[in-house]
Image (tube, rainbow, N blue to C red; front, side, top):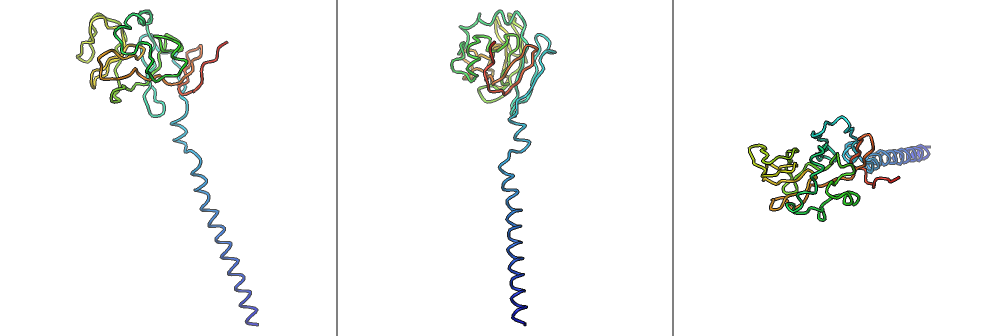
Amino acid sequence: MNDLVDQSRRRLLTAATVGTGAIGVAFAAVPFLASWKPSARAKALGAPVEVDASKLEVGQMLKVVWRGQPVFIVRRTKAVIDGLGGHDDLLADPKSVDSEQPTYIGSTGAARALNPEYWVGLAVCTHLGCSPLGAFEPDNSMQLAGTDLGQGWPGGFYCPCHGSKYDISGRVFKGMPAPKNLTVPSYTFSGDARISIGVDEAPKTA
């Protein structure tokens, strides 16, 4: 009789141990499997940013954040757009051959934009990563933050950290500490001035 009780107890304990172990493995697997899924923060950092730039006044700039980096959206004046090709001899890389930008931006020439009126680019100096300031209006002797930007300033950006200057298409001037033009991210542009930054596809043609 005692042998039967001992065997029954042994089977019960064995079953309980196996069951507990299986439950433990299941609970341990939950965080392990969950770790394969990207967090909400990771999704947010990589998600495209939608911007309605239609309310941006001519000559004004908007700054948004995409993937943890600041991005400039500038609505350029007609005078600046008309003068985009008039200072190529002052630029280190006027055709943006050695620049980081989508291939479809390369075909837009000096504008470096899907719509010449709106320029989109990372607000990160290619020298040491400071954020440039905007000085958009062309002027014979533009002053910004106590700095003379030079005769015939065409409109553009100035980095106060080490003095790098860019035109309003983000193209760096010769002799600057910055080695490259400002980066243009992937983006799409719709007719109502809606910009989707981080959409990695070429614009569709009709």
